[in-house]
Length: 316
Image (cartoon, rainbow, N blue to C red; front, side, top):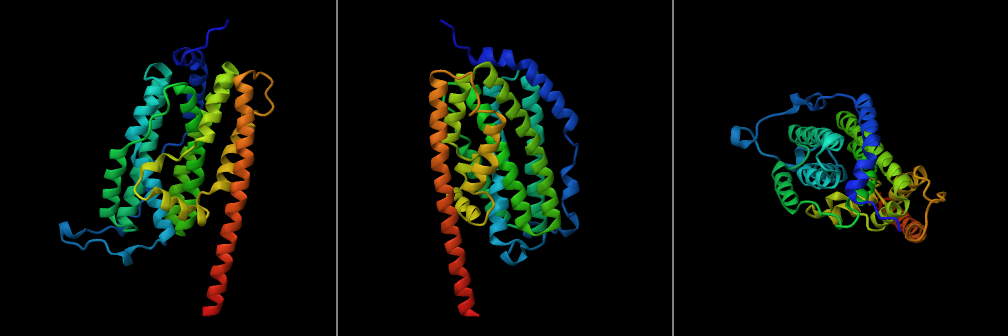
């Protein structure tokens, strides 16, 4: 009877792969400075320093763009919580610790640049933004189940980083402002490199422990929630953003989940047995159900758009 590998065993076996992927990342990663993406000339004092406090008319962003920017920034703000969780899952030793530190430092730039942009341009209410930050960081990030912590964590961050990349780029476009769009494209490029590291670690884990890794992947996909779930008003804001194409079920399925599964050759693998095969069957059924939900959402969105167009025509 083969003894199952522990998380520690898996980390040790995958360490050479992690070292190679870290070196690849360092070669590809572009060094950039948050201050280069902020229009500092637009800044002025608030009332505490003799200026005027924020008023809604000062923002040049639409309601959707403001909501998307706040949601993206608050997600980045929760970095200390993510760092704690990923350190626990990956360890802080050797190459794993080096990666965790590098990833954390790169992610921190995202919060810095987005907050500086929003405050300097007065795009959102800075008081409400700070209140939301305090609430979100106090809530923290939900810890994954105790079983298969590493396998579930690396599968989750693969999907989350790709989803974040999509959300960042679409938010930039929604801002309809060239500096914001350039800034968020830069952030999205970082997220893509992070996703590649995690996706390739997951691929190596699938080769090492296919059944256990596929069960972890299936669990993550079928229970997937974005990391901003504990933000104030997150569910309401997520619906608004989905309605306007920032991140919706169709994107989640066709641009995130399916491409990643294809890269992992999940439905072509011949090394699965027992629970691994059962997990793949569960995953296939879940994807079929998600396809139906995505179609229904698209139909509802199209009907709502048609009604708005009819009302606008009648009013005009």
